[in-house]
Image 1 (tube, rainbow, N blue to C red):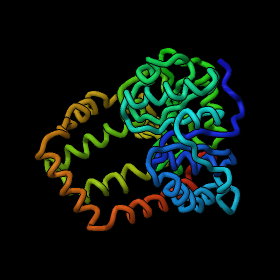
Image 2 (cartoon, rainbow, N blue to C red):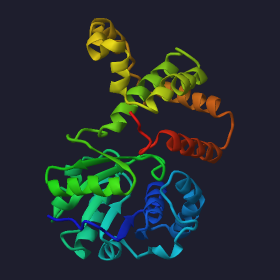
Image 3 (cartoon, helix red, strand yellow):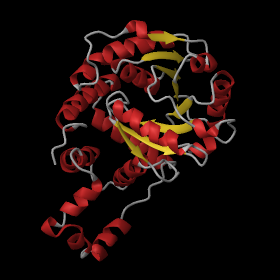
Length: 317
């Protein structure tokens, strides 16, 4: 299968926060976008979202025009109509396997066999997504991270029947888009980045549940301890540098003690009503009554500042 190397029009199925984030990125990079969503106010919400994020996209170098190219965004009646008008389709439907498979069936009725379908799923294995497709070789997971218009990372995961050239195409395409795609080589639950994220979240939940520290202390430990280092390097580099000039071999001399620390980490039960009550109380404590939209806006501003300093293209080492 040979995907279209230089698509001009991108189709988006679903226009929630993920779909709207994709639309903003594609418009910023000069593509035409055709979208669909069953919500009656979907188009209005998407256009407002894009207008509100355009300044941020300019500041991180993804948008080069001063104004949103409104004429490059259009809406269609459904997934089939979107697919028929597009060179590449990104599916952003809710995390429901049956629903997503129904969307793919509609796409395949209308699109040529060479049209690549990307899924934004955060955890459904691509082999399951493509199980009922006539042309499963075209399906690939292209998993973004919230907020998708700002966070550079895209996980690229092929299924058992995904054509290798589709994986290679996706890596090239998203690199040219200004994102940072990474290939995940095995289909595992939650893929790669969410597994790393949930290892930390699991321990944060454990610390709340066991009263090891206050919610604010847990926040500060991440923000002022781990966060600054992890903004400029990954976990494996951090571990390597912990050994000083001796690097990883020196770190591994301490492996028996480090293993004890790993074994001592918690395994909280998120389904426990007691744990859930403590998490709700912790969230109320750290948000201090501020409206969540205000916190989201503050987060996005800080992300823009961070990306301008250490985002893709700023690496010197």
